[in-house]
Image (cartoon, rainbow, N blue to C red):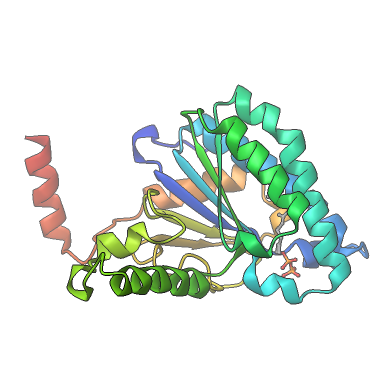
Length: 251
Ligand code: FPP
């Protein structure tokens, strides 16, 4: 059993859930079966994260680039998503979890948006973990949307370019109001960010595992979190400065 320090968990955990297709292909199954099994892993990670006391969990469920997949796979993924949200909302209520969505929602089919709106509204008063689903999400697209909104504010005379600070820019992103992720897990052995949370990951600790998403277990999650707890996060400072800061804050 892996021991975790409850005081040193990430406040915000982000996950790139990769390898569903390969998991299925290795078993001569259709890719969608990999996604269905992946949805079971989602349930486990949501439940565990909430149990452990993680405040924010953000899952990369569908990228802006995923629209170029075969139409049948896109349709199946949208159906799976809708089914998952409908089935899980009651559990989210029991566990006090609040749904949130980032990404370009105008690209999503109307029925998916309706299901999302219902779930967001129903769970809006929940005060536990915030579960953010990144859907039709791309980091570059999100940055462009934020820049366009800021430009419009400047044209309308509500803002001058000199007012744009990192804090202000941050508040114009889809993730405005969420803290940056402390820890990012990516499954399936690929070591890249793939247009996920490009701005927000500036100081995030990264963790890569060879395991495909459907095979990712509670034990692997705990192993990843234990790895996070062993890291020294310096945010551009020196190790000595951090120690001094720690001494002062403990004084
Ligand atoms: C990446 O695997 C995964 C996706 C594009 C979709 C993720 C979806 C789920 C985990 C299931 C539904 C989600 C929720 C929130 C219920 P891939 O298909 O790119 O795998 P590959 O790289 O092996 O082909």
